[in-house]
Amino acid sequence: MKRMEHLLSFSLLIGISTSLTAQEIQFDPGNWRTDRLEQQQRSVVLLENMERVDSMFTENLATGELDLVIQRYPLARYEYYPDGAMQRRIDIGQRHVTDTMFVEQVSTGEMVMLVEKFVKDIPNGAYHEFFPNGNIRIKGTLDGYNDDGTLRKTGEWREWDADGIVIREETYE
Image 1: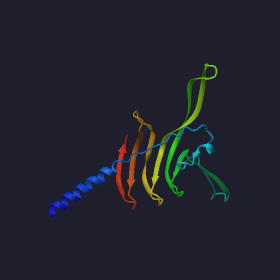
Image 2: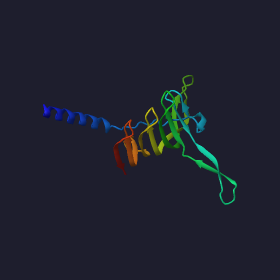
Image 3: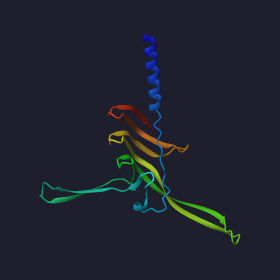
Image 4: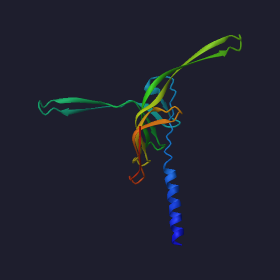
């Protein structure tokens, strides 16, 4: 009976560890029609691109005057759960892409060139994923894509469980 318990707990442990190693991260590049940030949002999946700037006044102890301090944050993708809690924050860069194709005009049979321009989001920088209660779930750094199209993880990555305990640490080059 004792051997059966050990075997069961070992197989349960293997099952848990294999499910934890998945950590597959998906990223929608956007294909935005414009580079105006206020128009780069999708309500269907509750995500938006936003550039954040914080400003505050601090007192200069030497002069007693107030100094304005401005902190700029990188352009980032913010994704939310349906209740409005943040699900992921991903630093991004944007690349302007031009796509050209020829289509036949039905009425004349003439070939017409169509040029489509759009903006593609490239994950580049900090990646934070959260549980619905706001606790951190995954933290790491992304640097674009690998040759096979998967996201390129760099540096140290950590994953926590719902209780805030680190369950995995990995380092990427």
